[in-house]
Structures are given as C-alpha cells and as structure tokens.
Length: 281
Ligand SMILES: C[S@@+](CC[C@H](N)C(=O)[O-])C[C@H]1O[C@@H](n2cnc3c(N)ncnc32)[C@H](O)[C@@H]1O
Image (cartoon, rainbow, N blue to C red; front, side):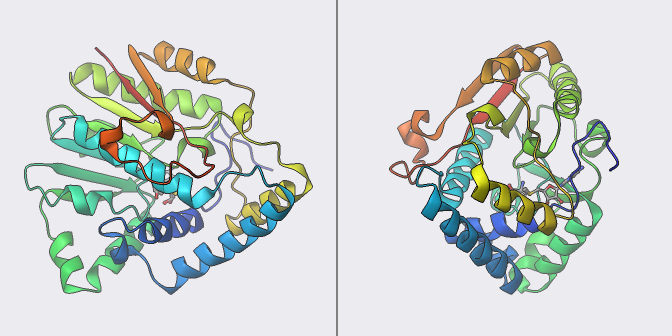
C-alpha cells in the first residue's frame, strides 16, 4: 500500500455528503443549497450503521449532534475573529461560505479538491438563489490541494481566519505539523490572523471494539481507502506541536466549555468534539 507523508485519504467526498446533510438536519442556514438525494442517502445509511453500533456500545458519542456543535462553534470563532477574510481549507459542501459572504465587506475563499469544487458549483448553478450566490465577487471557490497550496496566492492583503474543519483527523502527525507551520508563517506575516480547526486526539476516542472495527472497514470502503490518523498524541502534545510550529496562543474549546452566547446546541447529548484556535501574538 502506498504510504506518503499524508495519511491515505482516499476519496473523502462521501464524508462531505454526510456533513452537508448534517448541517441541513441541524437547520443551519444555507445547507439546503448543498443537499439532495445522495447526501440524504449517505446520512441515513451512516446513521443506521451508527445506530446499530450503539446497540452494542451505549457509550458511543452521537456523530451528528457533535458535528453540528463543531460547525456552530467554528462559525462563532470565525465571526469573532474580526478578520475581513476567511480561508476555508477542505470546505467540502459547507454552507459557511454562503452565509458569511452575504456580507459584501467579507471575502470568503473556499479550497477543496477539483471534483468537489466542480460539484459545489454545479449545485449552486441549479437555482436562481445559488447562481446569485456563485456570482458574488467576495466568494471564491478555489480548486486545489490544501496540503500544498500556496496560501498567499488565493488571499487578498490583510488578516485572515483560516478554517480547517473535518480535515486534520485524516492527516498524519507530520502532515498536520506541515500544515500548522505553513499557517503559522501566514499568521505571523498577517497580524490579527488565526487558525481554527477541530481535532479530538485519537487517545481520547472510544476504543473501537469488534463493531467499531466493522464500521472502520465500511468507512474505508466508502472512502476508497481513507483512514484516520491513529497515534498516541495527547491534547498537550498537540498544543506543544502548534507552539513549535510558530503559534504563540493556543486555545482548545469543548462544546460544554463554549461561552453561553455561542448558543452551542445539543449540550445534553453525549458528543465528542474539540475545537482549536491558534494565533501568533
Ligand atoms: C469531512 S469533509 C469536510 C468538509 C467540510 N469541511 C465540513 O466539515 O463539512 C472532508 C473534505 O476534505 C476534502 N479534502 C480532502 N483532502 C483534501 C486536500 N488535500 N485538499 C483540499 N481538500 C481536501 C474532501 O474533498 C472533502 O470535501
């Protein structure tokens, strides 16, 4: 099996279908533009498999509730960043760019692999509202590889809030560190910038057991070989790596610890999410 600096990611588009439908299920504005029969089928099939897994493992966190929490928390951090520019890496079928770029003073750049960007553009072209959104000069959909892209090339001058949602878990430690070094250098050159991403250390996740291993096999098949980055790094290890990459401020926020004003939903549910914010003072 080919092994590179980056964990084998296969084709992660199926995960973007799942999250797109999760944003719709969570009643997040703009999600309806990026959902349809395929995302609904992926959402229902995945939830069915997870429901079966939960019959054997009552302690498993709820994926969809946790994902909505994560997405809302990242929305709040992006809004609070004060940056007039957002760069979302591996944006997939996220509806965040559509809602934030309704403010013409904010420039929103989404990056994903060419097939996903083309798919997103196709979805937008289907409705008058989607076409109006796609025509916004302050919304840029850029086809590229987030792990190699020259970040400055797609940005206007000034501070930027860089978002990487649902990506880091598929990168191995060295690929994560490489991304952090690139973004930290960007933040250092653009005072007021920040990086926001989600990552639950593998060591904190429930041990898979036999059912979980079956789910992992299904996931690998659905994503044509993608695997998650399994390693023994703790939260403190990750924080130390972010500092070594050049960040001077590192915060991590679990849904239960978010400020009440963020109105993070589903706090009574068992979920597992951790959102990070890193910046250079
Ligand atoms: C789990 S989805 C996350 C989508 C979105 N951020 C969300 O949370 O709804 C993963 C996304 O990463 C994209 N992706 C995977 N590898 C990538 C890479 N090297 N560069 C850019 N995008 C990538 C996939 O195409 C997919 O859209």
